[in-house]
Image (cartoon, rainbow, N blue to C red; front, side, top):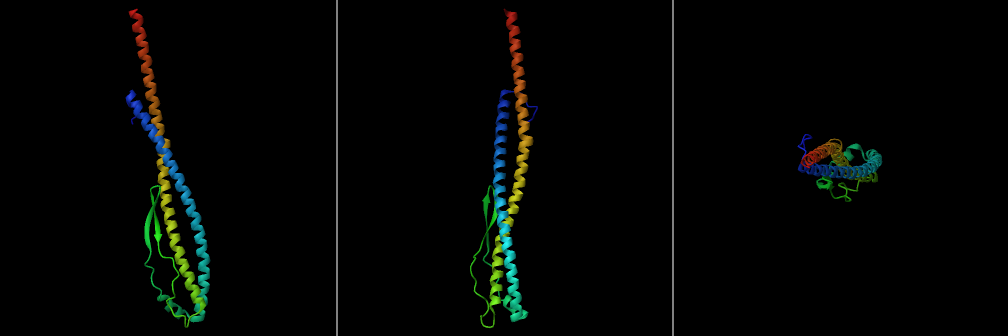
Length: 204
């Protein structure tokens, strides 16, 4: 609403209504921002825990792989690796957190049977296989969490900008408008009262 709006009671009611809506909008934006911040902090904690687990699992996986390469030969281990089937069972859905669509990865996390014969292989190869499969499962979870955190961070920034605009621009403008109209109407009432007194004194 224009700050130079004609000072009428109708415009005053409209300005007060808009001010109330702006204040309500700011409260909602602030609540939304707080909820999203709590959600992203929880995701960050999860991401740190999973990243730490991935690092540890990678260490054990490479130790087992190195041992398998020594015991079986690098070429043989490469041949076994080529027999691993690609992961085709990952499904990506979405869920909403305060209007923010974040990914929800669905996949079968199950124990997979070896794609090689037990004859002619060693326990170190089994350990390497199990460790790398665990890394894959953890990486899928981590990618979902990091993507969710990125989207939440973007939405937090957008929500904060809207909240700031309401708090620092829209609400002060409507407060100033309400005060301006109220002052103008009071001035009119005083002028009208003074005019009526003058008229009354002349008549009497």
